[in-house]
Image (cartoon, rainbow, N blue to C red):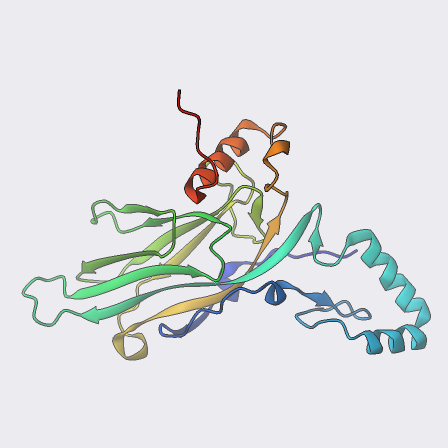
Length: 245
């Protein structure tokens, strides 16, 4: 049976230079294909000539694989379509050398997804000594700049827009109850990496598009929590203005 395994974000993260440019999302980069014979998931596109050759040399195995693809779908997970994008999380850092304050570290924590159109908001939780220590960013750039005397672990929660869910073992239900709509990420501030300028983690993540939310005429049958969430995101995107009496 074809199956998409959930993935832990910690196992996928690679530390890179904070100046590395995030890779922009393109529809092609999100497409993936399984090898028609061994079923290994790849980022390659289908080679039609090679497919015909394999079908001719291994007709029985080819028919079995073809039947699996028809039954389960390539790039599908249940009723949803799997999409892939890149996420960067990290911090920039510099010393404030002429400051007499103990808070000599200037740092900027950030979350940089290669797609922002499916992000509803990013919640950032700082050390309790910061006031406020909970910051919500509903539009890019998802970042905050602060001063401090030492490093600590920042917690961030990336909440997807209505109709999307994370394909990850680490995913949690979003505050409004959407299954696997929120992904928690921990990042320990880096004041020494890459010559003291900070660093960031890069990971490739998958999300599932559960429904088509573009046609508002079909939203009446959805539950109230999802409907309210959708209206909020439409208001933020400028696609919906509530009636004013």
